[in-house]
Image 1 (cartoon, rainbow, N blue to C red):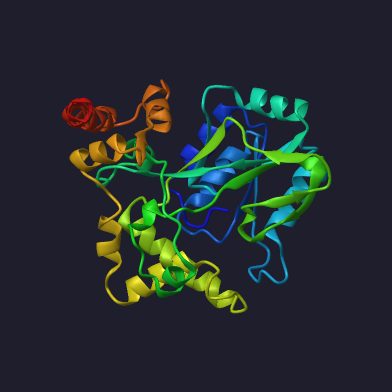
Image 2: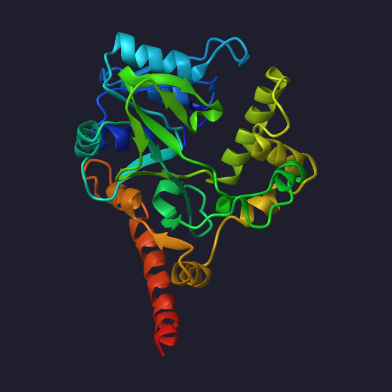
Length: 312
C-alpha cells in the first residue's frame, strides 16, 4: 500500500512488471505527493489497477482480505504476492514463473519470502535509494519485546529483523496474520523458494519524515492497536518529537570500509540486482550509475586486505 511514496513507486511498478507479474493491484493510503498520478499513468497499461483505501479503521476493513478476494475472484489470479511499495521481489536465478511452477509441482501453496533491508552510503539529494543502496543485510537482530516497547535498539534499525512477506496460492487462502507476514492455507503446505525481497525501508530523510507523519495519522485512526503493533513507527514518531530523528536516520548508512567489514563477517552481501537493472535500462538511463558501481568497487577493494589477513 503506497502512501506518499512517489520517490520509489515507479521503480517498484517497472521492476515487478519486468519480473513477470501479470497484474499489480495497488491500494493507495491517501497520497498527495504525486504517487496517484504515477499510478494513474500506469493504469493505462491495463497491468496496474489501483484504488484509494476506502476505510482507515482496521476494525472495519481488512486490506489483506479485500485485496486477496479481488485478485482471486475478479482477476482470477493463480498466485498472489504481498509486498509494500518499498519491497522488490527478486530470485536467486530462476524465473518467477519457474519458481511458482516448481511450488505447484511440490504441493506448496504458501511461500515465505525473506525480506532483506538494503543499505549503503548516504544518499545524495536527487539520487534514488534503488540506485544507491547495494548492500543487502543477511544477518539481522531480533529485538526483545522490552527493546521494542522502550525503543532502545541494540543496532541501527536497518539491521533489525522485519520478518517475511508471503506468496500464496489464491485457491488455498485461509486467513492472514496481522501485517501479512504469514497466513494459513486451506490445502497444500508451506515452504521457501528461490524468492526473496529487497527492502528499501530507509531512503531520503524527507521521505522518512513524511512516513513518520503518515504513520502518526494512521495510529490516531486506529487507537485500538496495541503498543507492540507498529512499534518501529511509534519509535520514529517519538524520535521526531524529541529532535533525534535525523541522528537515527544518519546511523542507517555505512562507509565503504564499514561495508567491507560487514561483508567479510557475513552480516551483509553486495546485491546490485536492482541498481544494475536500473542502470541497464536503455529507455531510461540512470544518472549517477557510475557512482553506485564506484562505491561497490571501494567496498571490494577494502575487502581484499581483510580476506588476505583472514587466510593468513
